[in-house]
Image 1 (cartoon, rainbow, N blue to C red):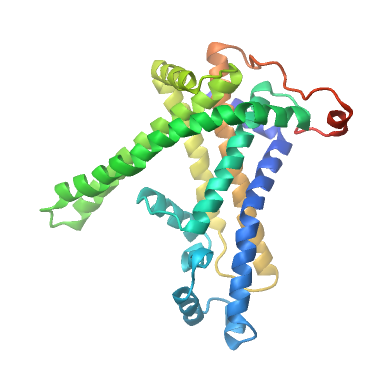
Image 2: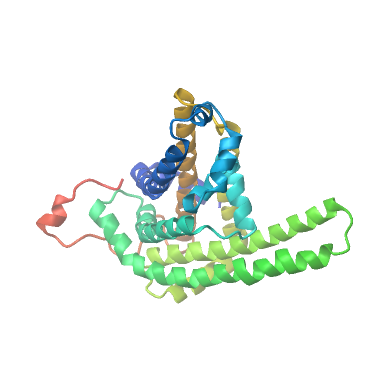
Length: 335
């Protein structure tokens, strides 16, 4: 378990171009929204006194005025976007099942589709533990995209059940039934926290099975996603301590990234060097979070290979594009 976790870290460290590629995809998904919001804010401020005060800190009056007339993506520009508050706000919205606004939801869906395309190549690269040409990487992405699209439909159904009926029953109906006659707020808080833990545990179990389904699909070159899910469930059921323990180790790494960001997260800042320092700190956090995400896949892949195969086993042949001048013209490596 620990060996697989350390092996996963090593695999990601040895694939720096993979991390850079995933970061650039994430950045590309957010830049259009950032530019649209920049135009809205600049248009609203104009050459006013409010613009000068907003540039040197937080102008609460202007912010309130801007929020009152905000629509679409502009509604996301709230005080919770400052520093670590953004992380807490997103976590709270997820646990309370707060729906995303239309613009954010569209971007989130687009990013998930792009990630669904890339994840096959990502797992294939991490499983093989050796550089592959960009042609081979994208070939693997294409091979598994439609398989993972079917898997996403199955996983989406499970997540819908959890985030819909189960969430509503646990955190609405059951919570109200338990706390109806309570008079101590601390007890109600403990009940709420306990229900969050139960809900989170169910999410972790589903996420763990879906992760191993992806890994089994890639490493064993499976075409049936129902078969991959059932195989992943059997694999986790037969090794509950190791699979859950490894997941918790990865979760600890992710929490360490969050804690580190909480310590150095910038405040509102001003124009000039402090603004750029805040931007760089934020981007470093994004890279660290993506590193942790890749370690999740790499360590779980390493553990699966150590149990049912060997360290570098992948059933499918190394993916390559058909030989042609066009294919050979695509040089470089993914790492």
